[in-house]
Amino acid sequence: MIPWLTDRPAFPPLTQALANPPGLLAAGGALDPEWLLAAYRRGIFPWFSAGEPILWWSPDPRLVLRPEEIRITRSLRRTLRQRRFEVRFDTAFDAVMAACAAPREPGGGTWITAEMQAAYCRMHELGYAHSVESWQDDRLVGGLYGIALGQAFFGESMFSRVSDASKVALAHLARFLESRGYAVIDCQMTTPHLLSMGAREMPRADFAAGLAHWTQAGAAPQRWPAGAGAAIDWGSGR
Image (cartoon, rainbow, N blue to C red; front, side, top):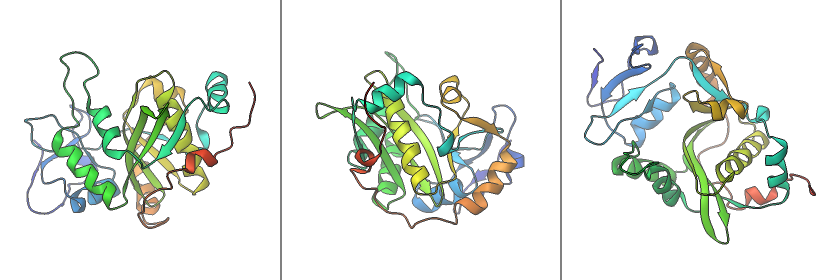
């Protein structure tokens, strides 16, 4: 059994998370900023489907990407150098969330419910949630969003309508975060795609210990410069 949370974000110790399903820690609570900030600072995130109560998770191990360790293939570097996409920050957060929420297959569902979208759009208004967007011909074709706390960025979801659009967004995110002294990008769950881009697993205890420092350092929450992606130098040529 897992605890049911009620009127305040008093999460149980991470060691109480279930092994099956992996990382399920608690249920209930709310998705307002107080709850979300308390959760992320401890390495906990919400993930649930429509019709379910709010479920809180902290898997072990945790997949993380150090910004300076992102792996960029030769073909992706060529795409970046050729500027096939215009990358913008924080100009279409709600559209990125809506695109990430769209079912990936006909008849499929989504965990990015209307309740989740409203909660994270509120976090965006407060300067905590951010989007990185890939545009072509003034059309949003890929991107990602997540939460920034101190020197940690917690990636939530990404989407791509054109080949390499989400990879380009992730590459720009990593370079931007590296330039600002961020320590880690939390990727939450292990996937072959993220492993191929340089992410690696970290024991949950080590991740939580790091967050105790990372989330207390760094700049105050604020909107990111829309044109920060254009300032990143990927070189030129083929």
